[in-house]
Length: 409
RNA sequence: GGAGGAGUACCCAAGUGGCUAAAGGGGACGGACUGUAAAUCCGUUAGCUGAUGCUUUCGCUGGUUCAAAUCCAGCCUCCUCCA
Image (cartoon, rainbow, N blue to C red; front, side):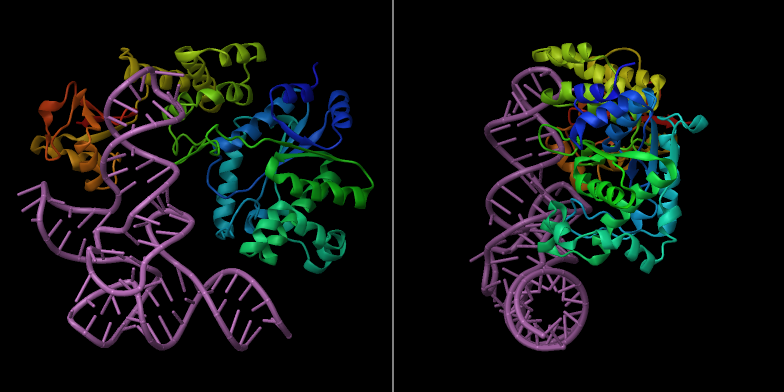
């Protein structure tokens, strides 16, 4: 079997590694237990997390054992890395709930049977720590002078950093130590912003256990225009289909910047690299084919083939006039509403396409609203039963946003 | 604990009594061009309203004034320096 390290390297996941040669050798000769931490700050994982999940999947496919560590304890503090301000504190109840959602989502991607992967929650050991004991055993090994030189703290010094958050690094380091001692975990993986936090644990284990463990980070997924992958202006792309419908996920990926196509294919799909390279090198309008493949493949991994097909069909029918409909986002409304007729501005708000009448009016005035391919020109237009064909109409906002209204009987 | 400084719309940031729903930039949205891309250009960007107009907004609460984001008082939050 090929060495997973080579695969991760070839596909461009890896950013920094400690002792590259040794780690590669280790991964090549024995199953390695490794962990990735997820802070439970929301009730769903995001597309940003997905790259980490991909790494875990690759590793597991090569016989290594992933530990998905839910940060039920560390989230109570909040990682200050990359944050300009202290995070809002979440209650334990919310964090517990979030952790349970993560657990469910992760089990769709990893095989947790027969101990092939583990899911742990650091609340289980962090919450019972005794402060004084912790300081004596762990705190003594951390130099404040050194910690302050880390980037993640450096810029916080200007804006204010509480001791509370400063302690985050110790907790994460302790996690690694705990997993090493109890599960033989020898490798921690994380986003490149986690490098210093990971090294904290790495050094702690070296000091306390005289053993060598490894750290590996991968590049944070950003788009060519510099945004964090999976963050759009209108919100985060979630992995939970109730928060981000498969169609929206598909569209998000379908609209990938040309420059990112090859990178995303490599990082977010399992397509062979020859195929990735071939698709990535398509020129001009041809590259749209690569974008379709990207959108389809990722949607398939996250939501399953059936949903991916539906999303693709919906996209084709909306953009290319194909006959099949697939899963277009829709709202069902009572027939009575349309017997009287409803103002277009109200309708837009009702189905969630706009937030206020002013916004709707602007859109109409600028020619941004279309109903069944007919441009709406008057903000006081009324939509009535006569406008419906087969009990439905298709509202188009701007170029790319579609929403179907169906009549409920 | 003491001394200074700051808090303006999604973000950055001007504005220091009326002409300010609040310059400028970014972002976002709509249009044109295109390939559901990028770049570029035009427009829009508090709410209600067909329009005139009305209502709410400049950390919070009161006050002065015909009139305040702008002046005064108290409070809250953050930052810097000293202890």
